[in-house]
Length: 211
Image (cartoon, rainbow, N blue to C red; front, side):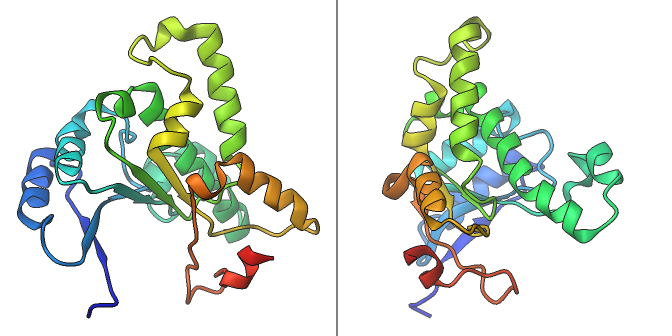
């Protein structure tokens, strides 16, 4: 159908095979990105073993898209999740923390420095944590830049130039102005993409964002 596009799910456990799959399918109609899992992607996304995937995606002009989850996160956060006693406790924690983990890894390992034309999209991790992580990474970079000699700019600059984040879930607040500030601090129109997550019960309609 002309109204549908798709991301290409590749075997991250076999990066060379994944790169071959990207080369085979990237030019097919409707393929708009390369999909990696947020949960279950161990080691994290900045590890050098994924470089064949990133090189192939950049060569074909496709963004790398990762979607947070919770059911597959046991391998990445076994102790933190083991003590969760309810769905609420587990779900509230794992989705954004997975995104933080992968973003931290990608930036600090210099992936956007080595692949400057490659873009990343983080889905379903929310956006309210992004300003905090940018501030914290910049602060630590200014103190310990010798740890990451590959970086030539502040971590926040890579995040603003190479990364996109979807709105869902926007989260609940009694002060819409605060949510607007969070979206602006996360990059606003330059980095934030609308997502609905319909038909899940926690989906966000467009009106939620416009308000």
